[in-house]
Length: 367
Image (tube, rainbow, N blue to C red; front, top):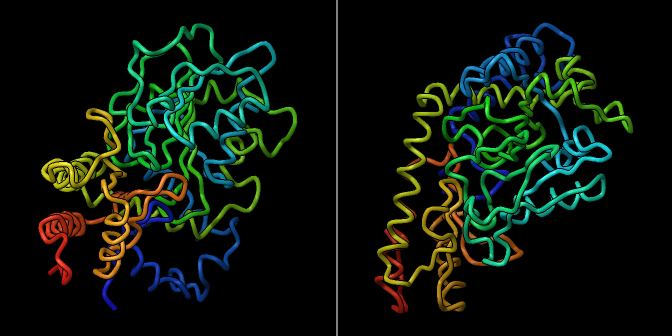
């Protein structure tokens, strides 16, 4: 069976060579006679998988020695709570820049734990842009400043990260590993794996060691970052298969030229789709404003909703999977994470161009 042209928002496409290698090793890892899923997380085979994944991620992202890498569970959603539970203490205020639904959810969890302040928001603009620094309110003395680096639902992305005196915390679930980063600028980064890093089940946290040690969660030993840092993410049974897959994806990413090679390919993929939208003469309407467009999630609508329904149906018939916009806003969305090949994006751009040119022909087909 041919591989689907998978533009799903997450869980998302994985590199074919990663899937094929996992298939070969599935029932007997390293000729052990056991799957990695059957092995003790304290054994020598898994110990190597665990350490290699951590070291490979450190190399790829150029994580400085000032920062530690943790493999946790609960997705980004648990991090919405863990961050304020560890770093928002009595008498302090945490700042949040709200650029989409996930940023709003992070803010709501923090509000349950302590005092918060919205430093900037693009909600009144239907989350079409990233707020400019001139739009921010004063934010001195914050416990931390939280941002969402890429907004999957609305298709906007921070292209330059803000300069701030506060510790910068970022939810990078949907664009980590897609471009080079200056990790030293961040107090903490967290990311669910299921978009760019691997399958669902493991959450990567990269945190400044000094800030991590200064934080604490008196309500729960398990929800204290230091518990996991001190145990090298082995305090409890980790999601061993997800971390194994993460390691394979990272190995694949190295072959692509690391974050610089991936960034180049991601820009080419995004350009193919944004060019089709821009050249459509208003047939396709982008959601994101110029300068805020995501390189990971290309969001757009068609002016005619009936036509939009037909477009999505025809796309599905041609093998394009996952193009429906998020259920909360509708429209169309092409998620083009690292593992989505350029060829798939070029085919989608061709389909979009052909659909526009052929509409409203009753006998539409795309070759």
